[in-house]
Image 1 (cartoon, rainbow, N blue to C red):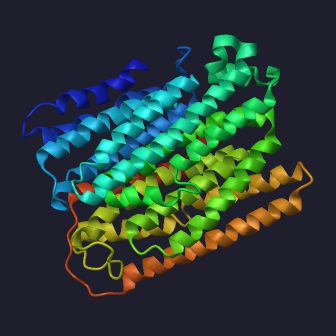
Image 2: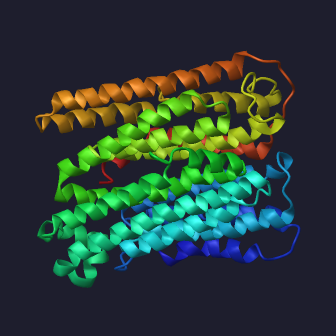
Image 3: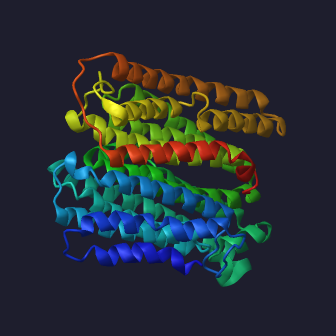
Length: 466
């Protein structure tokens, strides 16, 4: 079952080397087949375990979400050449590295070994560098190198943290100290708590940097601005998901060892990041930066909800963000095809059935990302903040938790105001010009809208993942 997950990306990789003009239409179809083995695995009650690989409920959930995002992105790729200048060679090159990206994603999401998780994450990171460079502009070339540097720093911190965790665990577990399941089962036998917690701190900081947390908040917005919009969709819907899964697994270990240290470290880092990002969003002047910085905000909320014990809230928020953000980035490719940075009147001028459906869906996604009901984010934030209060009730820090929640709500209010202002400008301001949207793009947005509705109906399943 596990081996079948690699068949679609390997097929994409091989097909991308064939110099056939029809390959442009054939590659998206092959890419969509990623859903078949992942869907079969998701429906299966089995949890494949191969020592270095363990596909638990979290891995199944993330793989399923990622496969849906992948299909949506490949649908949007069909009309990429109508918005930007990209030749067939670069198009096939994009798919070549997209296949390598998927292989890295599968490895990192399903890894039971910390080392294997790192290898998969590194493969996914390096492949995205080349996907950024499919845009031949000088800006994209520069940002690809910047991403390479920042990504190297982040992945090095994660590797160093893994080494420290291994060193703290090896006297008890021996060679099994690299395995997540063994560590989770024997975490209380580890004597060198200090070394283990320092290792977790390095892993967490490296993961946070890769998701655009403080102090490196702008690099993610810059590369997503420089790359073609399908690359930005992959970053927000897939790569950030793989990084967050790693944080989920490492934080469960740290929580069993010392929950108060985990919560203190994560809260301080997360609130500082949210403070900076809120004002960066307030000053954002184009769609790509607005949506990119918003992604950091949602990663902050997911991390805070998770360490607070709100696993259902974190997973619901995780899934909703994975669908909403790629949908908004794909919409950006349409909205900005008539001229970048043009927000006023951006939703005006779309005629016909496809045009009306497009602006309705984009409006829905814009309002859903700021957690207006019935968005899944509305429910995830209610349950997430509820989990924070429940956590505080078990300690003597209830007033401190209420202060943290009030501070977060203030910053979220600033972000909410910015998105509503942008939406009003898109819908009710500016001159109306006739604009065009293509079937493949509308199909991708419909897919994400359906996925969000299914997510709303999946509360019982999400509550029993952990």
